[in-house]
Image 1 (spheres, rainbow, N blue to C red):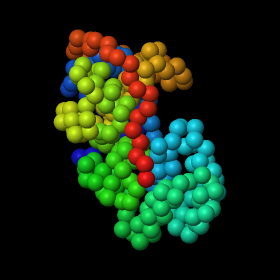
Image 2 (cartoon, rainbow, N blue to C red; image 1 turned 60 degrees about the vertical axis):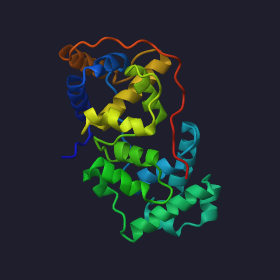
Image 3 (cartoon, rainbow, N blue to C red; image 1 turned 120 degrees about the vertical axis):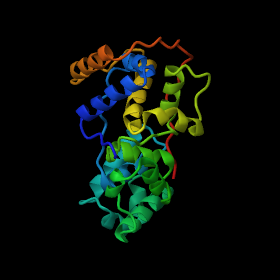
Length: 253
């Protein structure tokens, strides 16, 4: 059965289960605090936004996506299928990304692709469906499944931030490779997506050296964290390691 992370409560329940099943994650949660659920728009628009942001800074990605999404109303695959490539280029899209968006639009128009059903499929099968499409790499596929569809078992094995967080949090000698990430995450099925949220939060906390982010949800997430920690077994802290990198891997089309 596929687990979905639709609400903050869903994520907190999943992490509570993970910490009880794997005591190593207690120390990770202590440092990271309870992560906030991250969701994006589903469907073609959500996938297109991720494609637009490949290999770009957050600021640049937001700027380009803002121009692209504002230029078409409604923003859907039929509109993009008919859009002129030179117009898309003036909005800031590279030729490779235009080709990817056009290919996606054709697949959806021909009903050879249904993005909605991927939320109910096995995470690995859904991942393979997406990466078989032109211009959709592993990172894009996993980010779409996790953030746009709320797939509870999507596992971004190629994300450098998750890899580095696991190196530190699990006390590994080296950052795990993509191939090594699969067996490392196997104990967290079918909640690998929730584990990814936790590892991203841990990465941020270690890099910033300031614990949980302040904000409107700080009190609620701190309360949830304490509840989980109080019910979980104690685990020996992992020694600090060298400074971690500042960027995560993103696909390029």
